[in-house]
Image 1: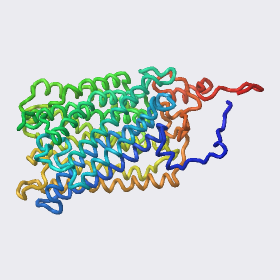
Image 2: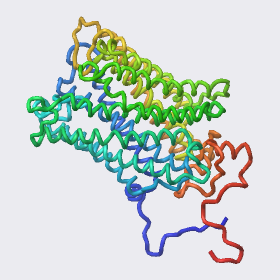
Image 3: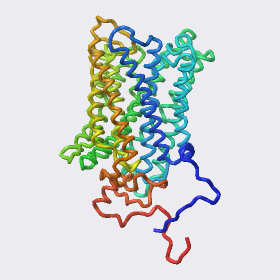
Image 4: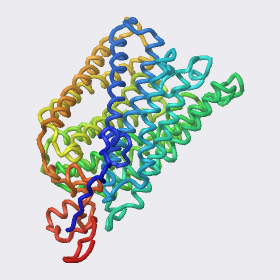
Length: 556
């Protein structure tokens, strides 16, 4: 095949790598920027979590006052959900989805860059409240009237509202880009039902973002008007309704649960077949279950509001239990995929198995909370905190680390050290369960969430000591991960283009891929084109996507 080498024009200086990364519109570099930015916020949120758990370890105010504590748990929840889990999974999708569908880039590269750069700007605004008298302190849900000007004076909450609006705008722009890319830029032969499951989960996730995030944005703007311009949307003293905020927030907030969990489910669905040496069991059932979760997610928001007395309990209880059905389909499909497979317990596989087991526990406690009588007892207790973390942390964060270990060779050409990876997993897994499983017992015993202190004779001390110990184990587990990443980038094991012998199209190109992604594409005849190529020896039928060959003696 004829190739052309493009040299810099005479008299043109090469751009520095810093400027190149700051101005890039390459989806792969933007994906890496997403991931790096998200992990920086993850470490910041983790420090806040250690402060919270240290304060709650024993009764009495240790080193934080109540105002500082309220700011810490508000910022922890905000950062983890809006500035880590959602963006980091979007970062992996930015890098991987175009490769998986055989596209050269995202549909709108400049909008892709804009959607990223809004994130550090929004996050910086949210954090900047600490520079102006204190950050937001009314909880990451921003419940009215706690968030109005009377109970939350100062600019911290205003900066929180503006920052979240920018972050939401970034998500909306990104979702438009993903939908356009997936529908319009697939390689020849890649029909919808030949797309990898990760692409399907990102398509449904992008649709959820596009439908749910504008609702939250409208609520944020209305709350900003209430605080600064005399509005009366949520203030009951001026004719507003604080329950309206809960409807708006949770109409976004429960689809948000699936916005953060569906991409992680997609990651696990790509990893399990590779390390079980079997195709994914029930591919079409998995797709339909993903679509079903997306549809049902808009009918369950009011289970967060059972104790308000303002919602129809039977309907939302039934719909909340019903959404467990498509999730259960996925669980059984994952089990069937591994059944009698040749399983390799690599680090990506361990984190995938950790995701399944931890998300299962979170799902079971969620079904329990779908029952109004149980919810009445457990509402706003640490049982709900345990449920939330088993879904978000046990689910999404385990999925993030699985994706990191699985696709790191594709992004860098080097494989992370397996020994350090397994040390990371086991400390992380044990620490996670020590940190959050005791919260179920605390909640059943009646410990309320969002409190800075508790009575010495309440019976909460032992489990809080265990929980805090687990939180510090999670922090320790990050150290071998960081050492692994740095050491691998400096002098890690170089691997081939497809070190895992995987199935999907991103492994058909070099590691890392060239700027244009592919020289040639294998024929796409199933949802596993690289597997087909490897085992059916179809390389001679590869489809050229680079420039056409030049005939001998002809002109280019």
